[in-house]
Image (cartoon, rainbow, N blue to C red; front, top):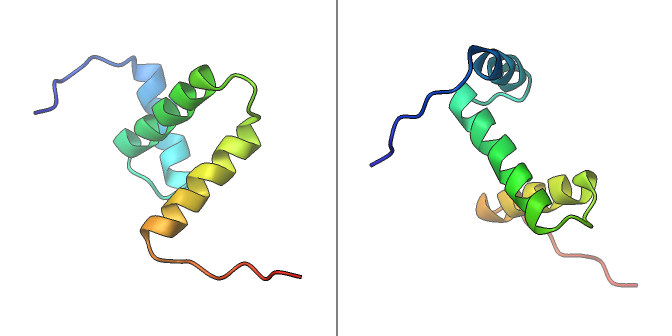
Length: 72
């Protein structure tokens, strides 16, 4: 069971704005930011764009949106 935590009104307001843009709920937006932050702390040498691409690829794989990579 999830434990309730207190978040600042400013964080919730920012998450709500970003959530609208990315079609997420505010809690899912905060989870997304937490995931990126955790990955960044664990892998300080990875650029943010690379982390975003990895997360997008994982989401595509989970949803079954896969295609074969063409070899030359």
